[in-house]
Image 1 (cartoon, rainbow, N blue to C red):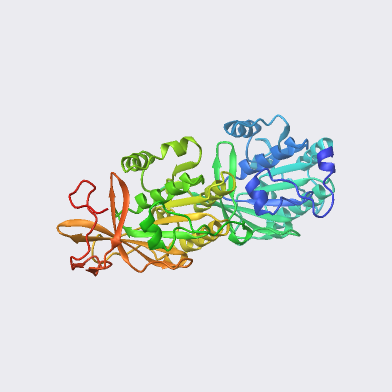
Image 2 (image 1 turned 90 degrees about the vertical axis):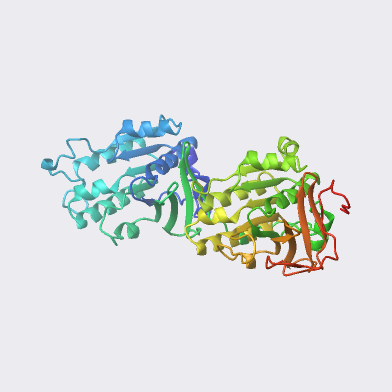
Length: 505
C-alpha cells in the first residue's frame, strides 16, 4: 500500500472518484477497499470514468491497475490520449488474448470448483499480489459472463474475485455493459455500490447523458438522476440542484430599474432575492426592458449574467447600443457576462451548473434568462421544466440574486397564450401588451402581481426609441388595454417621439 492509500482509515474516510461532480453526488466520494459496479450500455462513458478513477489515484501516489478483457492496452492508451492524458503511472493488463477467447479452447476463468481459480485468473492474482494496487478497474464483466458459460459459475467467479480483492485492501471498479438478461440484479446484490450510466437519444440535438447511484452501502448520497457530459478532458457531472442546501445573507431593499416611472409601477423597483417574469408577445420590448434593468444594476457596481437562448450576442449588443445602452464597457470590466445558450446541446443540469458558477464563482447578483420558451424546448417535458425551474429560482432567491425571466406569448393583439404557465413560480409579473391607437401600434405595461411590494394597479405606456426606454403616465382613458382591443377616451396624452411637437416626456 502506498503512503497516500495507507492514510485511508476510519469508517468516515472517502476517496475521490476523480470527478468532482460525482464526489458531490456521493457526498464525499467512495468508501475505500470495497468493490463497486459501474454499469451502462456501450457509449455511455464507462471506460472514461474508470480511467479518471485510476488517474485520480495515481495523482495521489497510489498504485493503479487496469485489467481489460474488452479493449487492448493500445486502445486504452489511444482513448486516454484523446483526452490529453498519459497512462504511464497505470499498469495495464490484458487478461485474455485472442487464443484465450477461442471457443474451441473451452477455457473459463474459474474451474467448476466453487473456489478454485483457473490458470488465467491465477495470472491476475500474481499480478495483483506483485503490484499491490490501491485501485483496480476490471473491464468488463460481460466477457466474464460469456466465459463462465452459465449463471451459477458466473456468480461464483464474481464472489471469488470479490473475496480475493477484499483481502488485498484495494478499491475495485467492475464495469458491465448490461448485456445480461433483463431484471438480472445478482451483480447489484454482490457489489458494495452501484453507479448506473444512461444515455437517451433525442430527435434533434445531442443525446442526454445522466447517471444514478442505484445503491451505496453505509454512506449518504444524492438520489435521482444527475446530468453529465463526456468532453475532451473527461466526464463532467452536474449534480442535481437542491435549493434547500444554499442560503446567503443579503439586503432585501428594492433597487432601481433605471427608470423612475417603472420603479413606481413596481412599487419601488426590483427586490434582491426575488424573480420577475417579463410576459408578453414577441417584439413588445421584453428584452430591452430586461437589459435596461440589468444596466442599472451594473451602474451600481453589481455583477450580472445574461443568458441568451433566442437572440445572438451581436444582435443584443448592437440593439442596446442603438438604444443608448452601451454594454461593452461593463463586459470589458468583467462585470457583465453575456452567454449564448444552444438549447439543443445543453442539458438542464448543465445549465443549472452554469448558473451556480455565475453566482458562486463570479459573484453575479443579477441574472437574466431570455427566454424560457427556448429553455422549455431543451427539456424532455413540461413537468420536468416546472420542477427544474422551481429549484433554480428557489436557489437564486435564497442566495439574494435579482432574477429576470423572459417568457414570450403567442399572438399579437386580442387573445394571447403561453406554452406553459409559470406565473405561480414568479414573485413579480410585468405584463406587456400591444394596443392600437391613432393608427399606430403601441405598448402597454402593467404589474399584475408582486409578492414583495405594494405595486401600482395602473397601466402605463412603454416606448422604446433612440433615447432609450421611457414609461409614460397611467392610461386612465383606456379601457380593454389588457385584452389588446382598447377604447381610447382621449383625455391623457400618450408618449411621442422626442422630436415630435407637443412632446411632454
